Length: 281
Image (tube, rainbow, N blue to C red; front, side):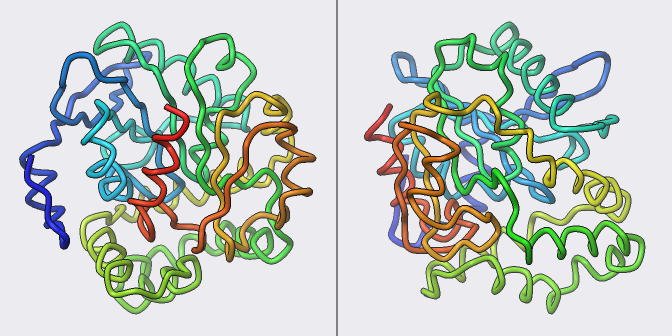
């Protein structure tokens, strides 16, 4: 594979990522895969709310030097069909079931790595029955008061702001709120993801309806001492847990690492995140 200091992610994704459609209860689910190399661990990645596989491409580009990577797109995101998700438990059941389908139809999974809302999907009790490692990036066990209020407003006025969601100015404001690494490379990656990750109006309405799952404080009740690595941004304000002691109340003895940045660490600092993942895989 060719790697350069300033990666052309469009070119890389076109050459090294392939799309496969799986079916769960007759609903299509999209999985993206890097070129398979025998003997390497298989890492399944899960993106956050309002995102899709594009948001994980910078991280996967780096991880693919060492691992076979797969990205599953959540219901109502990317080209995965929307389904009814009533609470965190139904989202976690969906992930458990699609994990089984991926292992049956593609290959066994050694590591699950999730970002933000994707973390909620992968931390259900049944998921720990497997022997796969679990890595959480920017988890939000309990949303901060400010983020919770923001989420409620988004849900209430979704039909209005969905019309403006993909406008460049609105994308810029969201990115500046969530991203805290103010380097040229970070801004370039954020701009690239925003250019290609563009949910439809109907998807935005559907995704806004998932806000109650973000606010479900029971979602993380099974995580204590069970996570192989938790990675948080030093300036991430989406979670109410802001320091190591508060995070230990949730994750127990699970190792916790802080990186300089905000809520978009896989885009802001993909190489540093990949380096931390390599330490535990």
